[in-house]
Length: 132
Length: 132
DNA sequence: GTAACCTTACCACGATCGTGTCAAGGTTGT
DNA sequence: ACAACCTTGACACGATCGTGGTAAGGTTAC
Image 1: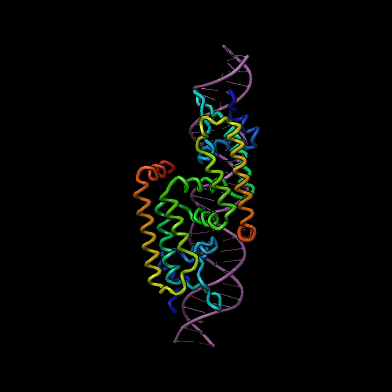
Image 2 (image 1 turned 120 degrees about the horizontal axis):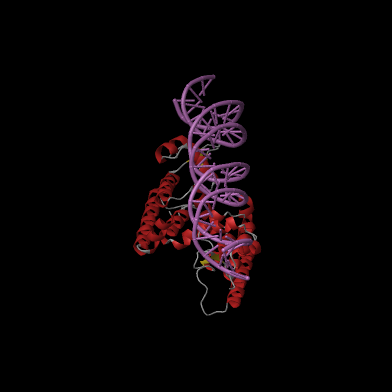
């Protein structure tokens, strides 16, 4: 058996067992399970746990933020809606009349949502409701 | 003057004035200022505030999460590091020996960070430290 | 079969988030 | 010039986050 149980994994990764369970609930590192239900951490999971710690430290991130990034990547509609909103920001093109610009933004937003909804019918919705 | 002051903006968007200041501190909606320092919300900002509310409601997001998405989009190294980590997840290719796979992941991670660091020399680093 | 380990489910507790309110002082429009 | 509004900063407070602990019970390895 080249997989570690939760306490052994905690030992070699520096996370507490408690945190390993928490990380799993965020969907960040989800180890296999033994027939009896024990978590079994393989080399891949161990490496992931170590780089996760480095990721957080390097950028001062919180686990919840990485979890959110993951949700964004797995839910197309979510990602596109958020990115669409963010992209509408910076500076409106100087010579377009404001009303036209707003209308254009509005349309873009609706196009994005509609498109995402169409494609996401199965995947995205399921993923979202399941994490709630 | 076709720009609203903070209380007027609050009135028409449904946010409280307090929240408008909070949203500004997250970098999500940053209105112009009058010479005396008053916030001036133009039509663009007002529209943005309304769609922001819809964005949060529709996906059950928190302001901090949208703020984080914004940081990711504006800081290349951050985005690439997070996305790199996430992409390493799903399921390792079944027939590649584990050690090779790990090595490959490790290399990819380092390539990404190095590349991002090179390109981000000015922008990213400044942005990060400034938000801390 | 038993010791050592694991599971889930709770309670706890400081830190941060989201939000309100208040105080002291500056700005604006008439 | 004055009323009405704005600014920043502080204190407050419930809700959630990150983390630990403990209890009641099932699993694993020898």
